[in-house]
Amino acid sequence: MKPGGLRPLRVAVADWTPGRDVANDPLHAIGASWAAIVGADVALHSAPLEIAGKTLIVATKSSAWSQQLQFLSDAILAGVRAVAAGAGIERIAFRAGSLRSRAAEQARTSPARRRRRVAGPAPGEAAPDLQTAFERFRDRVRALRRAHGTACPACGAPGDDRDGAPCAPCAGRAAAERALGLERILYAAPWLALAELREQLPDLSGSEYERARQRLLQRWWLVLERARRTGRLSAAGLERHVASSYVLLQSRLPPDRISPAVVRNLLGDELEALLWGRPAPASKNANR
Image (tube, rainbow, N blue to C red; front, side):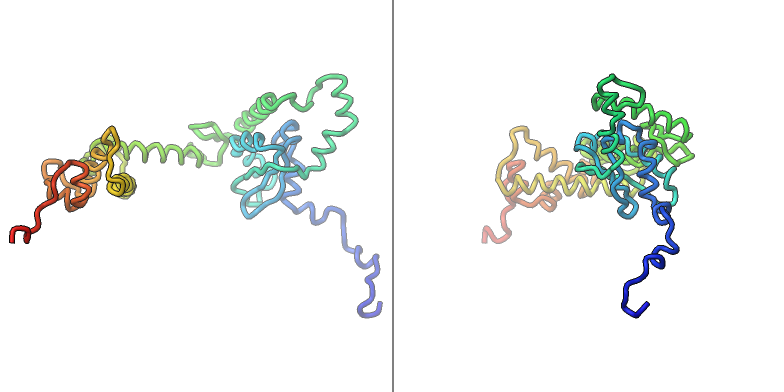
């Protein structure tokens, strides 16, 4: 063949074999097993779209399907990992839009499916509604949990932790609830020291306490600064309670050691006068 000429077809395909590259593609493996992972009903309304880093993007028929499948993402992820263990997929994201699944489209329009529609429901037929589809999917989730051997003690989602630790969403929710509980204690009794707080939260760390303290100080100052700028207090007088909590948390002093001078130093004369109606201190040069 001359330089720059066309390459003979026999040379171009000499070392090519059907499916050689596809066989090693994790997305292809997931797509081929998608119906087995999520069930035939759910597979008609969803399909793996792409792998972006460590995230599997799944296309769904609608936002309702995306929302419902999000609750079952842990179970789906377990099935995906079983099929494509080396892909390093750590999470699943759902995107509503047109599906790129030829198998799903063929299943919708196949002659066998059209005949089943006329003859009535048969085993393996698509669910008549969304609720039935997810009931069937939950049955598959329960089967996955039994096969997987480990589950989150809080929500029951299958997981890889053999020590019985909760899954990431449950652990995050528990941490948020704990932080909120700590902030409520600090608001109601801001004078409590770390040792006293540990009587209610035995494993409370110094860093955890300090983060909650700083969050409250920032939040309270926004409330007080808004009152100062507008020159008005709410009808319930919430700002006075917030100011008391702010002064105690900021000064770290017990209530019996909080003096008007400490309050003015932390809040300023203008805010103190607005909150408690105290006149601003006279200037040293006022009587000269």
